[in-house]
Amino acid sequence: MGKILAATGEGFNPPGAKDFDLPPFIDGVAFATKPILLLFLSVALISFFFIVSSRKAAVVPSKLQFAGEGVYSFVREGLGREIIGHDFLKFVPYLFTLFTFILVNNFFGIIPLIQFPTMSRVSFPYVLAVITFLVFHYVGVKKQGVIKYIKEIAFMPGVPKPVYILLTPIEIATFFIVRPLTLSLRLFANMFAGHLLLLVFFLGGEHLLMGAIGLKIVSPFAFIIGIALTFFEFMIQILQAYIFTLLTALYIAGALADEH
Image 1 (cartoon, rainbow, N blue to C red):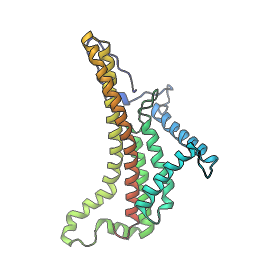
Image 2: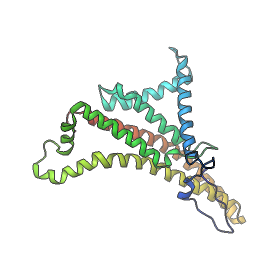
Image 3: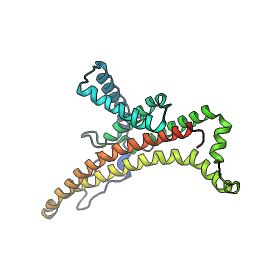
């Protein structure tokens, strides 16, 4: 669970941002780090699961097929059809890939022996947000043309002209800066803060367990809170994968709309 910090003397070295800066496991190879390894592992696991679950598809699905189809149907119907509308099918592969990729990488934060959420490194959410940014702007430009698309972003229909002095810069900043930034930072901040909380309680419990008798009595409470937070973090991990994909679908739907 991150880098284990040893207690020095009677003090406790609390976990912090340094515990997310993991050194390369191959000397001289800057990109050979645990987060990069987990990224490739997530791709392998997702591919393996859905290949196996769909390889022997039957009318009466097996448990594995049922699970795979359940995840796909959730994204297809709940995020594709419901949010985007009649043009949703062409975007389902991206939404499905995005949801499962984020979900698995989030889950790594509570899986024993791995215990590191990949999305707690901000560069990964940034890349996903940039891809979403390019997708929904490409969709809007393709549907309406560059001039009309930019015009509708900058000059919202039905607004008094003097209001454009204030509204136009806000709209441009929202579509081209705020959306990708908040999309990425929301995911990063939740994964970072959640993992940091788990480190605090589990490492704090370990430190108390190694202390005086009075501290040993208190230490189980730290572990109990840590376990409870693990279940809470599990729900947050699912929610953040859902929110990121939901907002992506909303942005695509907005780009497809005649007016946005």
